[in-house]
Image 1 (cartoon, rainbow, N blue to C red):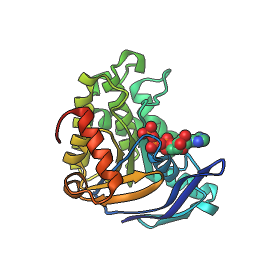
Image 2 (image 1 turned 90 degrees about the vertical axis):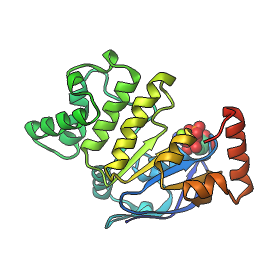
Image 3 (image 1 turned 120 degrees about the vertical axis):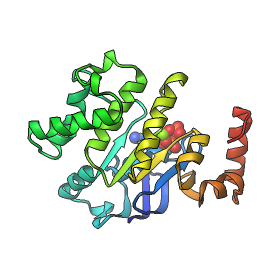
Image 4 (image 1 turned 30 degrees about the horizontal axis):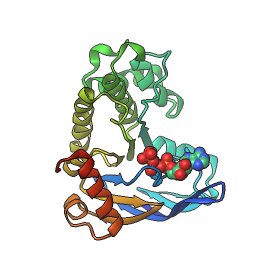
Length: 250
Ligand SMILES: Nc1ncnc2c1ncn2[C@@H]1O[C@H](COP(=O)(O)OP(=O)(O)OP(=O)(O)O)[C@@H](O)[C@H]1O
Ligand SMILES: [Mg+2]
């Protein structure tokens, strides 16, 4: 069980996340949706300590953290037990795919090179990139780079995998292979919190949807509840706009 309680975050006195509480069960795929600027990335980044939340508690399967007085040891522990996949992949350009996947294992988990190599190879195989292990990012397509990003995250065996719009920097024809990889990861039972603008994908892969508006969760439920029977005016408007622009259905 993962429990976020009363998390708030301000930037320069502006309240960006306002008292957010979320429960995530083991194996859940939770999707966070909402307009640009709603605070989705800030929420993910706060959970991973890339931003410092002003207040809030996290219980990550027993690892309990109070963000208002987090210690450096707790931050390190949290980094070991979570992993993030970024929109812009954020791979080290001067390292091969294999070395990118090994990085966290060696630096954060302090693993021996041999053990890290073994795990990294297995993860690259999982995302279908075994033959690309010795390629540098610039010689990989965007979709392949993002799959390396996913392999890197999974290599950490995170209790919670955070994905922030993992397909939105990709050319349309490369989106499918990354969505497929995420779907496979979800099917393996990996607990994840995913920010996505791909509503049909969210509908398919998530078992719980949170709608964030101006730093507050104003709607939450199953994909069917949130997409087909939204209760709040803001969620209704957001979804109507989305489907009008997409000129389609789920
Ligand atoms: N480092 C920062 N310093 C100041 N303000 C920030 C910082 N990071 C984010 N913000 C502000 O916090 C708000 C929420 O930003 P955030 O990036 O979390 O939104 P988002 O929901 O992820 O949007 P998008 O869908 O465009 O990615 C925005 O108003 C943004 O300008
Ligand atoms: Mg964002």
